[in-house]
Image (cartoon, rainbow, N blue to C red; front, side, top):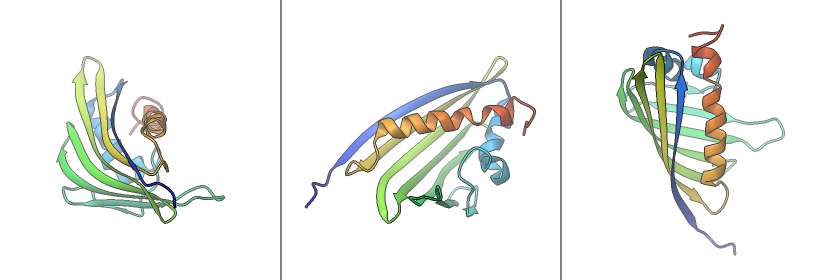
Length: 149
């Protein structure tokens, strides 16, 4: 029998975008815009108590299931959600995430903080942080470039 364990970790990523908080918040709140930098949602209910759900992955597998519930929304300032992430039929993590949008001179500082429980070595905080960092870079063309929101 494989040993079961949980690794708890918190990471925070800060990004600065040359766009107003309203514009940066919008790429999280609008399902069509969010689908350009995050997994397209099968369901998307952006309100406190609402759910965002997506299931998919590369053609060769595995299938990832993201199931989130919005806990707090402060327009243009803060998003808090909890979520589970499964790989095929295996739960790999449970997290709570806070996304803060801070107005700066010339733009927005986004502070992404994730507190997670990662199960049995199926995922690690280091892998999650690396992937999240790349994902947040995908917002840049939507808020700063020709594809602006």
